[in-house]
Length: 494
Image (cartoon, rainbow, N blue to C red; front, top):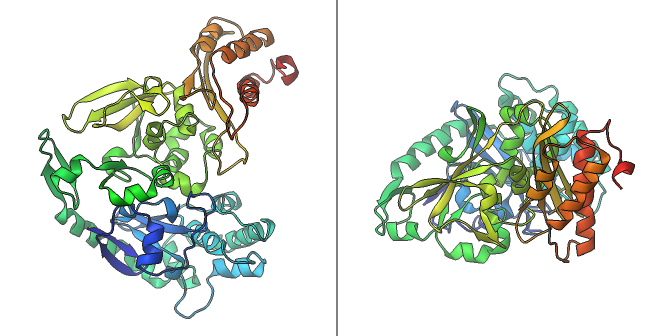
């Protein structure tokens, strides 16, 4: 049984864990303020907030999520907030709603709820906001009526109001100002009690086929053995939502043992269920890859980054998976565990892909974590992506590059490329050519030529073969121009 708080009500439901949160709130609870739009996580009309109790057991961290791609099971033990859950009892508008009305940010109103929820989530953020973070909060919401300037003005006006929010007891201030109802202050205690109830009801079962013990909630042993592993749902709920409603799922999103980012010796180790947003916000990741937030801004939108897990991006096996391409260039390797035998093995990420959507792992193996060598402060790293839209879009072609240079010579190199082959590619011949050479325009031009021999793009909806070849050449050139702006110019590489 799934248990969570929906607005101010405790929910206990036996609805399928693989169904969508959107369908549950609309059709089961009849909360129709949350809209059905694209059902692909693009438009943001279905945005809700999902709150998770923090380790201090005193606060709840809220994140915006597109409910069309949120598995209902991922609400388990959490606080889900729809627009009905922020409306003031006195029937007046919240400051977020007032700001949008005042700046003319709503016409047909279909998308408005999504903007309201995203900005309410920004208001609830535990970190002090800035105009930049306020605007970033609505990067997953699309409006076809107003243009965006009115919504941007409303966002910046709202941020001016939030500047008065005290650091001590901010939730009490938000409730007093009408951003959220007063019941929000009771949620930490309620989630603590709910956590205890869930832990008491958890069942450890023996899977008959192999005798390995796994902890599941609401599944018998036979069902657990054939369950579909489901993380953030940002891909599977686009591809086959109806199937996921009908089959048992094993939920891995938010599992503490599969989350977190840590340093082990010279390596950075990342839990499989760590989200893209957690990568972006990690102080450790920013330390070793200072430009990572800039790179990850190109990976979908804030609500999707809040949901999508890194291992999910790897195992999806898309030839243009952004995180896959990024970590291929960083030399990542996976820790796989056979859930039946309890055995673990290490596998370089580049060896995971055998062919289009074919993986070098068994059905019983799951990714526990992955690691990559921590770059030196003198190393070069860059990620580039071209898509039809800058944000909220799949790449036509993407690429990442890592270089280590000693003196004037390249000591080591790795290049990755997506959208130019049946699998996410590394370009070993291009990298090998550069090792031991001094960077010059002639050397880089030769490297760009070699890269063309290592790819095999096809024409599809994202571009022709010729276009993709041109894109990769330009993206690889962009890496070098980023790394060596004083030594190279665009004219040198044309």
